[in-house]
Length: 116
Image (cartoon, rainbow, N blue to C red; front, side, top):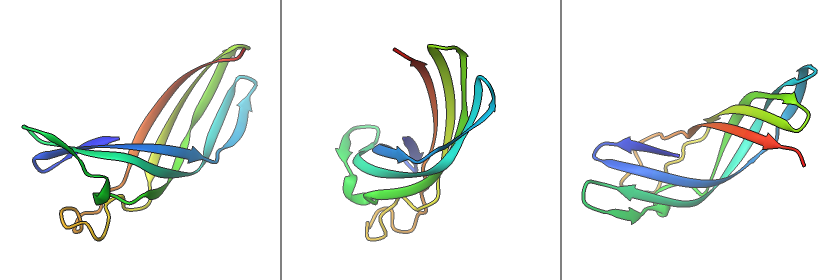
């Protein structure tokens, strides 16, 4: 995930664990939804002249909700799309540079799946 705040850009890399319910609408279409927990792996700050690690400016764990759909047009080929909306503030309260901001993660995931 990434974004711009003021003159800086931030790139946050997470390991995400969703717990999704899969509700079959019709034979080849399902809706997926549920909570997700994200563990921060690394954060970087970019400006016009340099980049630096800024993992300490962000919380190690954040929570959110994920929802989307899956389509399997043929038995071995599937497509899915999901949207993640963060519920918790990703900025660390004790970080001097981001302590007054409320930052929430948002992401879109598109997937092509093959069953072997």
